[in-house]
Image (cartoon, rainbow, N blue to C red; front, side):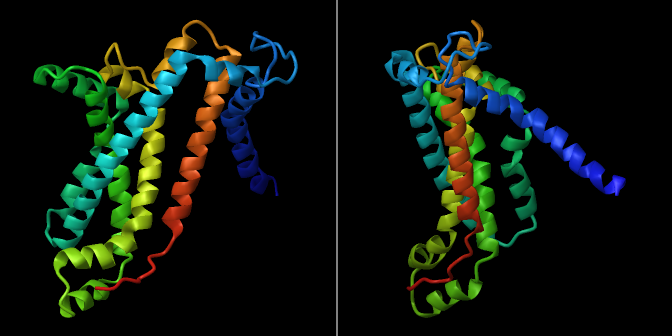
Length: 262
């Protein structure tokens, strides 16, 4: 019985160490006092301060635009890559799939330094353009993996039947393949959006002086100390991230409907 209890004790300790600081951050975002370590009563005023902070609003807008553009480009490239590799039977498929996953396997600080060097050599001005290119690179693997999983579970007979009925390859993709992989695309996009929206390390390396994202803004504000305003901002980002990841998980569990017409 004692041996059976140890795994639960271990999981409980790890869970407490991981989530208690997050819970305290959420709780103290509703703190009336300006001092984060002193509870002064329940208040929503720090959320109101966020809405009145022009720099925070601009950083939030930049982060949303960046995540949207990165996920849009990543969805197109990742979907095309997954479908292309799925339809082309080659010994190199596994190697190509492994290479496509490298951006999320390489440590972020190394990836950020690589992007910094490449963009400097190319002479690209650092700003929204370099941010979108860098974020697209690590958004692609999330979408690629989700779409590839959906394609593996799809019935190939549906595409073959559509071709036999005289449908063009484009109609087969649009009417048969695309509806089947759409949940995978959306799941990957939501996961990639969360990763892009929360990224700090790569963004610091490739951003410019005139463009500031929300995570980078939080990082710079933390240098002057943790305030209830930062706690409120972190709570909002945490809630958005949880919603995106939960949505990605729900969409990822949906089975291909297998419906489509040519």
